[in-house]
Image (cartoon, rainbow, N blue to C red; front, top):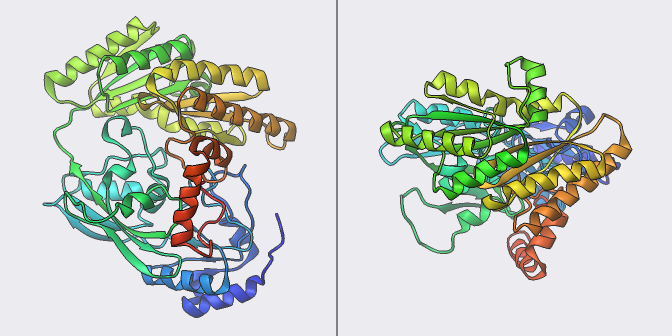
Amino acid sequence: MLADPLDADVVAAALRAVLRPEQVLSGPAERDAYAHDDAEWADFHRPLAVALPESTPDVAAIVRFAGRAGVPVVARGTGTGLSGGANAVEGSIVVSLERMTRMLDLDVAERVVIAEAGVINDDLRQAVAAEGLWYPPDPASYRISTIGGNVATNAGGICCVKYGVTRDYVLGLTVVLADGEIVRLGRRTAKGATGYDLTALMVGSEGTLGIITEVTLRLLPLGGREERAIVGSFPSLETAGVAVAAIGAAGIIPSALELVDEMCLRAVDEWRSLGLPHDAAALLLATVDEPGETGAGAAASIARLMTDAGALGVEQAASPQEVERLFLARRLAYPALERLGPVLTEDICVPRRAVPEMLGRIRDTAAAHDVVIATIAHAGDGNLHPLIIVAEGDQRAQDRAKDAFDRIVDDCRALGGTVTGEHGVGLLKLSGARLELGYRVIAMHRDIKAALDPQGILNPGKAF
């Protein structure tokens, strides 16, 4: 970690002049606590100060000061990101939106909610559910990640195979631009075609074009769905991948289709003793939510396709408690693996037909680089999460893991995939994004960045 290039005390004092003193953290330990997100493998620096705004005008005041001082600004929510997008850069101010947690409006008739960026995903989901409404995007971190962070990375989740990702629900945004101006983008109507779609531009921009402070989201009715779960255990990752491809080819759109490999199952079972199968190389977990006979027929078809692909066994459940039980292993997989050591998390997305081939290549990469790779996946849309695990402090193993990481990205691109499905580019995926996008498209990104952030103070060095 490099020494602070500017006087941290001066920066903290200046921030306290535009905010309340308790909204600025300046102690070394406090700054270290906000230095990085969950991508500890990516570079990070101790920030000069941490600002805790409580309103959009607070954020604007911080950014205006940063612009005058030429200080970079890195926005963050609760730091659950996995690509280094919220990692502090040298000589920066971290702006944490964790105190901006108000639900500003909930229009039940129009099925629209407006929330500040620091609202936790699950808190929003519960609040709208109380009014008979549903916000579908459910990243694995939904209980602790913020809506603003979800928007900044265009987060996905387990149900996105059918219901789409965060971008599909964002109608409008309030954004603080690099000059401190506050703009409101988008709309709250069901339709709209006025001007360029600047709202969509901001979604997934990882804090490089503006700081999102308020989000207007469309909602769906909560009722009318009857969830059924189908879980198959498979003798190999490849046979599970064949089942994934078969379900897609059959035209069935499950509300979730998740894969958990043997290592994840073992880690979860050793931690929580769930009685998971020990003879399976992978579990494939599906849900359908069509009501009545339609849903029952879709569940039966998926069970049959799993069996035909070589499943060792298939279990079905219809009650909410049983569905939750069957999916618990998927929810617990990542934290269970974190208990084993540092985890380098991949996030690639390949065409659904390429899932079996990509799973095989991941297995081969683990062997070739002598690393341990566990795999969980939103398999229904080809979004795979190979998790590379190394022992704490083993530098040579970490070097091999980084080489394996790069090979996985190369294989993904070779199969027609994209280097990130939902975690964002951040810092970890910069080289892969460069190859995927190409020179001219990156130049377009730079032109947009220069137009909106001519000083380059908003999360510099991230996303492209």
